[in-house]
Image 1 (cartoon, rainbow, N blue to C red):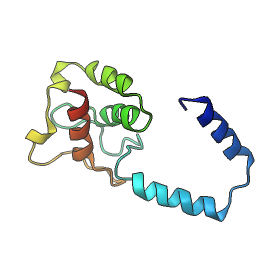
Image 2 (tube, rainbow, N blue to C red):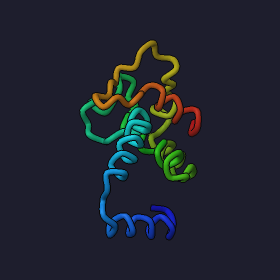
Image 3 (cartoon, one colour):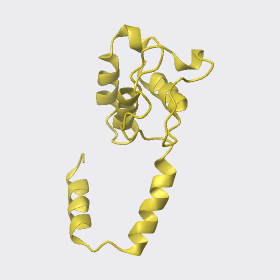
Image 4 (tube, rainbow, N blue to C red):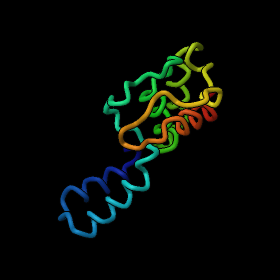
Length: 117
């Protein structure tokens, strides 16, 4: 949550009854965002063969795109150090990290590198 409005909306969601309409809305939203957001489950192994910590980079991208906190995402990305921030996923033929939940890892990593590097 990044604002009082979001806090109030979340509190309302906790006290109002959960309906079938809510279920349908949330299911549709999950389908829409599923390929974009890492669940931090660790099932992918977490690090590609070139040393990129995949869940971390995807979390930093979520800071920027999901929460509107670009500066925080870039700051965290740059803290990974030059050996990681210099890696360009576009240079790889195929990503070695595969998400069992369908997150488009290579595309999301390239997006993070475009934004933050």
